[in-house]
Amino acid sequence: MQSDSMPDQGRVADAQKGNWVDHWAPAWTRPYLRLSRLDRPIGFWLLFWPCAYSVGVVANAQPATGFDFGLVIWFLVGAIAMRGAGCTFNDLVDVDIDAKVERTRSRPIPSGQVSRRKAAIWLVIQSLIGLVVLLQLSPFAIWLGIASLLLVAIYPFMKRITWWPQLFLGLAFSWGALMGWANQFGTLHYPAYILYLGTILWVIGYDTIYALQDKEDDALVGVKSTALLFGERARIFTALFYAAAFALWLWAGWAAQARWLYLVAAVPAGLILVWQVVTLDMSSPSNCLKRFKANHYVGLALTIALYLDSRF
Image 1 (cartoon, rainbow, N blue to C red):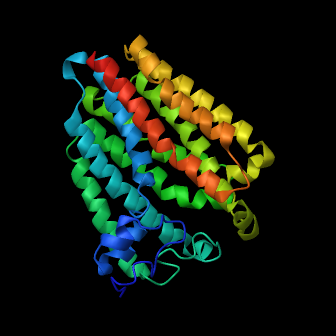
Image 2: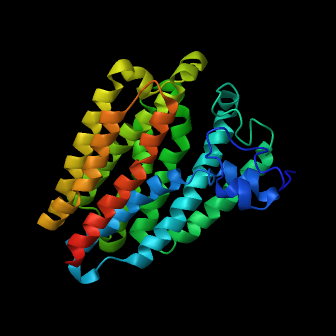
């Protein structure tokens, strides 16, 4: 068991120093919180923002409902729980690969902090929390949420068989873009599909940047990624994915009756995407990680833009 006087003991290599898990969480909980990546909260924010987009799009399509902050809170709880469950499942599947990669060998399972059995129990607990959140939604949205589990289940295996694991991550991580619409209308219409497609392209872009950190280790281990597929053209392809994502986001909002205020208010999100591409240093892991994390502010900016247009 880790001592509170040694907060860095057991710390995962790519976690930010001074994070709340390493310094404030009870020692016995730290391996499980690290397994859920709660020492690196960017992941659950990136899972949450598509859900928030979907609430904003609904607020514009049906102004009488307004922006449902209660639903947003439920989605945030669900994103934290399901991102943790997904990471736990991913680490159970990838333990042999993680042990061979410099950035991941310090994760709780390959480093021996958590056994596979205890990790499986923790996976079930987090999944049950996600189920509680799902049961707050309409019947159609519940079934739609259950359908996403197939994508969650197959994603960890994609890096072994395709150069496009980022596409499958996008399919899974963007699912929340459908959920708000599904919950409100009991079906899906084209604004939700457009929002979903745009978010998939965004995920492919930012996860390509993330994968640039591991490209040398991935090549040695035999793991595939778009970072390896694109090689020196990764910046160009990321720019194309980001540009298409932003255009589809604008289209989705417009199709849901958002107007000029949304188009103007969404500009900061676009500028952050441009900054990432222009300043990206593909040979610097720290540079790539910083630009990847900046996508939290892309999500925040787009959600604010949708809220403002629905409110004023």
